[in-house]
Image (tube, rainbow, N blue to C red):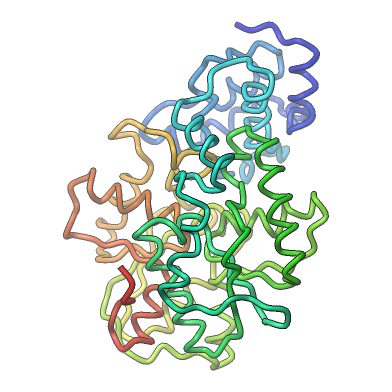
Length: 389
């Protein structure tokens, strides 16, 4: 065990540790934690050891939490357990009380060096924009389309980004992109304990957004949505931030966008933690899917506020879980058992996690994973998928 020094105690209190005082060890958090469906993770024990100042900072359990907020939702005292876990990770990162997983160290180095978790050159972020011929944001443009690192740089997720632009163009929405200057929003690396790096990324993005005269931002990632909407204000940002799902729902409800062609699929919708439990957006994606001709919408057994996490948030996308314990594999099994041939998502992390789970579970060819925007665009394009590969 590690003896807590005043420096460590101060860091814990600064970043969520004060909330630990409200926990009375009822164990509800452990009961609802999704990791305990197929494995073992005693959230209660981790919190209790934190209360007592007896944290073993070499314990891999500190890196288990993916911030899904199932525990917060169920806690009778509303203890923000993910924030408390983040404070433990900050102690490791800033005070050196333990070791950071190698994969997270690599991601942090990439973010510090090139502004994205993959380590791609900064200019690569806008390459797809130039290939697709999307216009640059200028003063007076209605909306800035802020693309997640994975929408910009991951081959699969990039098709979702293009689908967004095609749907927005079909609805005659005035939007543009910034081709230079922007970096990762910093959401997941902050939850992994790298507060100083997050501050650097956020401050740089806010400066570039302000210099460009941006007032309204449209995002496709719930992670970017939460961060730009709820966390950048800590640094003086004052933007209106909108996620693509409620934005499309409004366009469809106002008859500014009508999916015309049939998409004959049995679709189960997965509620992203960051769009659902974090922001309460549940009805909008279902209304969108129900507006598409030919599409049959199915419900998964764990849905809406009780949705099962994909396991990708708070650094989970960058760390490895044992096969047989992965939340994403369980979710894919649930989707197949529901009779769906398509699992619809509204988050790039969910898309990556579930497509990987299809392969590792041996379900390739039995189910596909699609973003809600892709399904809308397929209807708009007359039954064709987006053209960018």
